[in-house]
Structures are given as C-alpha cells and as structure tokens.
Image (tube, rainbow, N blue to C red; front, side, top):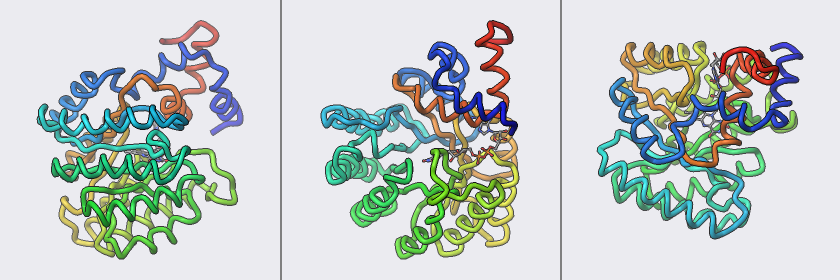
Length: 302
Ligand code: FDA
C-alpha cells in the first residue's frame, strides 16, 4: 500500500457522504429487513449460510439500545418465518456497552435467550480494544446461561488474543477469528501483516485442536488455504468449523470455498446506519483510493 493510498484511506471522513454511499453500496444489503432477506435468499441459492447484522454502533441513549434489542429479537422470528439459513450478529456498543456493561449484558441476554428458544445462534462481534474485556466477560456469562447458542469474536491483531483464548478454552468456545479492523495503538495490537496472519493461524489451530468451533473469517487467500490445511491435518469434518466472508467482498473466493466442500457463512448487514460500517469496508478495499479520487474529481465510474 502506497503513502498515497494511506492518505486517501484516512482522509475518507472528509469525502462527501453521497460519494461514500455510492462506493459503499455493495457492502450493505439495503436499508430494510426485506433487502436483507432477498440477499440471504440469493446467498442460500449459492449454497452458503448467512449471519444477519443490524447496522448501528456507539449508542449513547438507553432508549435507542432498547429499541435495537427489540429489533434484534424480532429478527429471529423473521428468520424462522422466512426459512432463512441464518444466525445473528450483534455489536455490543449498539446495545449499550458504552452506557453501562450490566445494561448491555441484559440486552444481550434477552437476545441470546431468544436465539436459544429458536434453536438458533447469536454471535457477539468484537469492537475496539476498550470493549474487549467487557465483551469477553459478557460472552462467558452468556455461554454459561445459553450454552452453544452464543459465540464471540477475537481479532488476530490483538496482542492479548492468545491469552484470551487460553482463558476461554474451558468453555470449548465458539469463536469467529478475524484480523481486526479498528485503528489500535501499537501497545495493544500487532502491526506487521505477516505477524497478524501467523497469529490468525496460531489462534485457529489452538481453538480447533482444543475442541472449540471456529468461524474462519477472512478474504485473505493464504488464510483460507491455511484454514483448509488445518481442517485436513486435524481430520475435522465440515460441521466442526466454517469459513466466513463479508457481503459484497470477493464472490469469486466464496465460490472457490464452497466448491471445495467447506461451509461458508456470509455476514449480511442492513439498516439505515450504514456510514461507520461502510467506511471501514472502504478503507480495506485495495482499489478504493483511485476510485474515490476519480469520483471526487468528477471522472471515472460511479
Ligand atoms: P485483508 O484485509 O488482507 O484482505 C484480503 C483481500 O481481500 C484483499 O487483498 C482484497 O482482495 C480483499 N478485500 C478485503 N476487504 C475488501 C473490501 N472491503 N473490498 C474489496 N476487497 C476486499 N473485524 C472486527 O474487528 N470485529 C469483528 O467482529 C469482525 N467481524 C467480521 C466478520 C466477518 C464475517 C468477516 C469476514 C470479517 C469481520 N471483521 C471483523 C473484519 C476483519 O477483521 C478484517 O478487517 C477484514 O476481514 C479484512 O481482513 P482479511 O482477513 O479479509 O484480509
């Protein structure tokens, strides 16, 4: 990545929202649940599964966190009624983590109870490092209360991730491993590309070989290969792990994973609050610098 790419990436917040919206469209199913249902039906036709995410984060009003909780509860009914092969992902800061941990835990508890009632599954996403310890405390409590119907996420860029895995192994945890997307200081996060890759593989191996379940969440073909190699080396059957990818990213790789006989889940975000999520996706898109600049200058494709 060039210095120029980095300048564009971190300068994205000053790009007009209308331009960001144009490039962000492929990453979000749409503003309503109906858009997400259509996206999931197409994903199912490909032979993949989904996880539904309502866009929103960093909520500072209790009433907003409570209405998001209600919206999440109704998702499980919609999944059942529409016969969707989907579970659900939540962001703790949408459910009040920045207001009060206990309040957030109550909201997540209600959603996890609904997941269990519907024999479905709730994944607690991982956000920036200020929320990691609290998110893992909530995960442990939910796991004790709702068993295998709840899982969490760990990020391979975090220096603490191996210790976190060690502290969760007694649960035979269900963990999505991803690289991590938040801008973290060097004191808490590894910065080297290869170190983050190696930590991803180390973490995946550690959980799988201890009887846990891993959602191998990546579009990095080296990590996809290493996930496949690990599954083979450990003699796993395809129900003991899954690959995961984000909506709108690399459908070709999606096909390759499915055609190789592995299970794949696509993360499908929908809702009105698309901006922060889309900004993170745009920063990761290798061709975004050129395209955004073209659009700002009035040229190029839309
Ligand atoms: P990397 O960023 O190196 O990308 C590999 C290749 O994928 C790129 O070279 C490019 O070809 C392609 N690619 C990646 N992003 C693209 C984009 N936006 N547009 C076009 N092409 C792109 N993070 C987090 O902190 N907490 C979380 O809870 C989650 N949850 C989560 C769920 C799922 C299902 C996935 C797949 C990812 C997450 N993430 C996440 C995000 C994750 O941490 C990470 O930022 C992204 O997956 C990108 O990392 P890769 O492993 O794909 O590698």
